[in-house]
Length: 297
Image 1 (tube, rainbow, N blue to C red):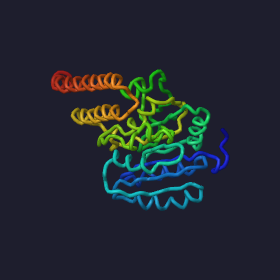
Image 2: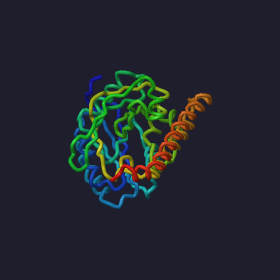
Image 3: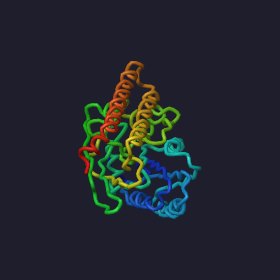
Image 4: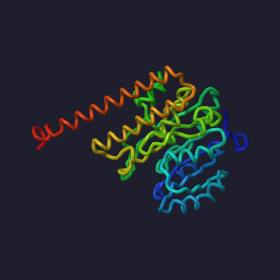
């Protein structure tokens, strides 16, 4: 496929949930504006922000229009990330969907174009992924990259977070024509702490083929207050993992293409994973006082 004019290119829909990300979201907006791909519509759903998020989005609407893109701003009372995603999914149209976080951005101007070209070269693909780098919020230096992923059983790896699987909001592109079939009613399970990316990608990994572009094209800001990266006490770690456990079980129940027998087998794997983790955290909790007495100065 050769990217030419907007009229001849599939529409890429960008859905971004945002909550008090006014100091960060301009990087994402700028990175979208510099994309080489000509046909993009973006919607930012403001989940009850109390900062200047609205002013920033409104100020960028003219820039998007001048570029030939469309930028929508939707405000809602604070409902949490899962509800924000669900509300946004009902707005999605076009051919391909990506959902970057408000504090991340694309570090390659051809990121979206390469994902679309990969799709167009293989009609059997349902999902395309790109490599990403983690960037320290203070130094803006890269502190790690992920550009390769094992391919033998991607559904299994995604379900259990094994073999180097990573979740990548904004680093996954989905074929929209399959959305209603794979995510009934365009609703994911409500979970406050974690798992929204898993819920969007897992049904696609089960039902379709995927491709990985092994190049760093997205920057993920590592923030000290980030939900997924904050240092937590053992109980907080357990609560987050319990959230992932609930998400995995409920997502399996929401994939209609999985047979009853296979669903039961997958659920047993999820139960076992959470049980092992819980026992490990309990062991650490019990042994830590001994460690402090004999080893910690």
